[in-house]
Image (tube, rainbow, N blue to C red; front, side, top):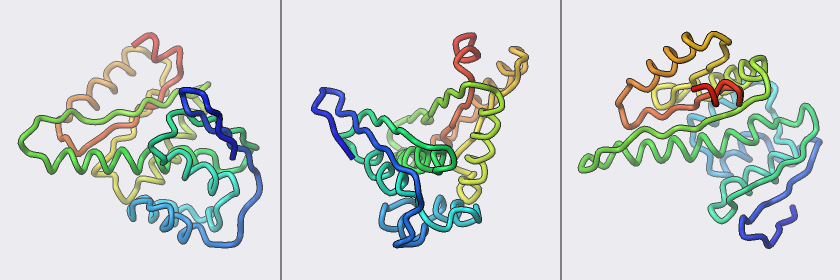
Length: 181
């Protein structure tokens, strides 16, 4: 892993193969990933070992001093898990902490995921729904994968009406659709 000394603190990570020195569950435990997310990964039977990419990147993404992370990856390296595990972990932790503070009115947390196509939106949504299957009461996966703008607007409006501060949202769309909203 190489770090640059730019003000944005970008980290560049590149990797490919599996690292079979420890199981995926042991790695996630050492990376301090929430139990519910670990169970989600465990239910995804093809993640027995972490990839080298995952071992390098998850720690870099979780670090608070790293604001930007550039990941160079090969196909089939587990990039969706690599990127989303630390993000969802932090988002769920923040939502739980917000709910415990009853003195303040907290707004739900949002993550916007932009994908190059509606097909990729569906792939990402499917992975995230499987990953968050054990903590679905804390997180809404909103896939705006339709070309019909009225349908998309309705789906987005319905997801925003929920006022529970513990419930955060991951909104998945294409850049062109996001600009239209």
